[in-house]
Image 1 (cartoon, rainbow, N blue to C red):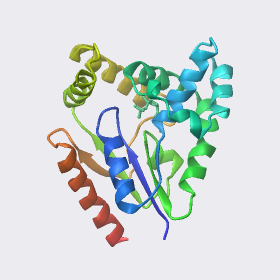
Image 2 (image 1 turned 135 degrees about the vertical axis):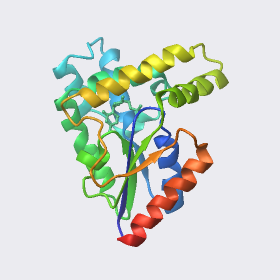
Image 3 (image 1 turned 30 degrees about the horizontal axis):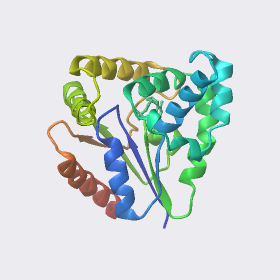
Image 4 (image 1 turned 90 degrees about the horizontal axis):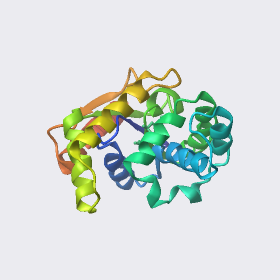
Length: 211
Ligand code: DC
């Protein structure tokens, strides 16, 4: 049986942690598609290019390989912000689509998380989840993560970053962040990581059992 699970939602909604745990549960490979956009932005900047330069960003997107996604520098808020700028470019999205679809087509299936997995990348996924949380809850999560790593960021800056990114990701014309019509919704505002995982597993099991 092939099981493709699409997890979409805004930054810091908890979708990455959920996707990783779901993948472990089902023994499936997991792709954090945000890393692809983060790596494109990194490579454009490393080449001295401008993030809005369509040709430079599309060229970087065509050269993305799995090995370069394992890079701690891709994790921070600056990398996320830069990623959402290149993610507006249709040529970048088109270049990354093949990579994502090939990943999803592996035997047995896969778990992918991002913004447009249920709508564009895997519209036929058996299970689609759209994860949300309030802006404040998401900023607080990010703040605690950065604080634990001893990084110097403020809650207000993170809240502003999250709102700016949401607006860009929702407002773009190419594959905007959007829940698929058949997505199951999960609001994690009031849930810790374990509660969110239990809730999402309930949704998935009900969807898989229901066919
Ligand atoms: O999930 P993330 O925060 O790592 O994503 C970084 C940015 O990449 C996000 O703000 C928008 C873009 N992105 C996208 O446009 N489509 C995806 N499937 C995943 C990420």
